[in-house]
Image 1 (cartoon, rainbow, N blue to C red):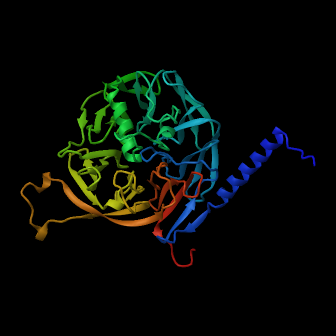
Image 2: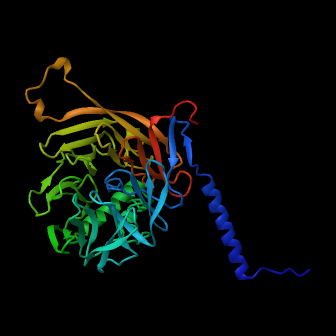
Length: 443
């Protein structure tokens, strides 16, 4: 019997069909809308293309009017109408999205790929018309933020590159930190858990003592200004959402080793450390501005992995507010609603810093104040930390989510939804969960 084997082209075609069928099957498992049976909250999928994502938790992804959400897709940039949920492709192509403007309806991006140390251009696309224009040429460094009136870009420059994760070669900030895959060996030669492996990689980069600088670029003139310089690792540069001259940044590295959170003005003045450690192994990080620009919020642990807070620092007065959380409620990232009345967290898995046995949830937090007993105040109570705690409500069961992809929660501008990204159905997609519980009959 003669058996005729298929040629290489046929085998490749069969393989492609199998891959497409598998992808289609996985895609078919991602519903468009459902009620989470564990929480009673309605969840909708906002994206169509597998591989789509919302932006990092402290990067603006909304138009100034709050009507459109900006997402990245494997084929470009898209917007989601937050009332109709209609998707609109703004720009097609290989682009690295930076952020949406707070003043204009523009999305800033870098076209294609660029090598570290090589010049590149920042472009902008209009959300409604799709018209593009060149914004500024960047001779060196990585752009991370834009100020409130869209006159300045800010970023960091290191004199040489350093790869934390060998598998990740992208030069884009958002994509580099979108899906972490840290790995390292411990003193016994065995692989470390995710969180500890990440600490090893961060410490190696910190100790490299690479000369760095934070800089601004004037969008109108292209003028470059160095704000500050250091051999510490400078990262997470963020402009205030309301003060066009105020920057926040971090000293990156193992959080229990560095003084992480700092602010500085664009002229280099008034450099300020926001949190001072008072115990060994105390950590603070994943800092972000409140939408009104009045408060800096950050993850605080006293000590690391044992006692959990979301801490607030009021910029004008220096007053501090700390909200306590339980171990399972600790989250990789937090966020706050525009009116400051609600908070959200994206949970975490058992290998992360809290080692939470049941932490894979997306949470809504209701802040609760702890009042003075019987109205009796300490003499210096106004200068002390205002304590409180979070009353937690579970919104989304993320038991099937792989936390190497961080969900990165954002409140919708109207305060009715929380936007996040997830791989709970296989491919990465953008979802929204309704803050109000579903009514009977909505299933």
